Length: 269
Image (tube, rainbow, N blue to C red; front, top):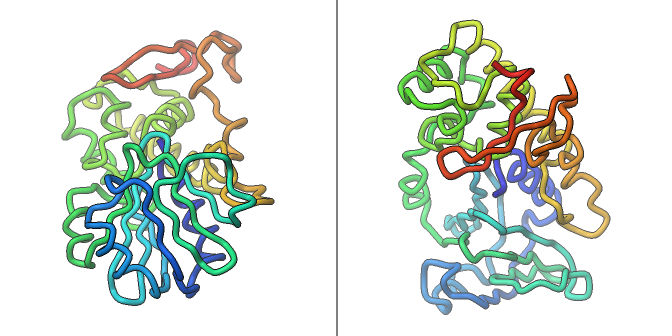
């Protein structure tokens, strides 16, 4: 599932390409991917333009010139492609926004959604999310206070969107490895120095993942050389049985709270 770095990559790349372009046509192939009748969706989106794109946690918000917002959550298996019909991957699309010569295709929205909301509805929908981990005001003390409230294992605490917004399955493992902490550690067992290491690793891992374009496998547009650059840089995630890049011990793969978890028993404590 796309996490903060993947959605931030999409936000940056799409902001360079679709802002202020007129949405000349809307196609909805799967009505369950939207939240209003298809005709209502078309009437409120066609002939509008995207004036801004913002991100909140794992969501993208497409701000329309009417004041409406298209709230996107890709969930598991969802992705986007921007290009012509000839360039489009041979995949089923659920929603298509036509922007003149190119289209924005929403693909794999079987669990994800593109909902049309007012500003107030969007604010209400996102109100329960925790703080953004990279926002300037989010401190090491904030991280410690929020994780200590959970009194659970570290990985599910980091991935809880009401605790901290945007971290999921992949980056919780990568952050724990970078900090030298087992993802199975109870949050209340962490020392102040552990929280300091965790905070620094959270910033380092997420910023580096944004820099290298996240782990999405498919390019956003033809010639996209950024998206997916993290795939080859993951240290533990999805590397079960492979040698640890630090010590050479096999990376352990287990299941924790119904999630896959990857870690090194030698380098993490």
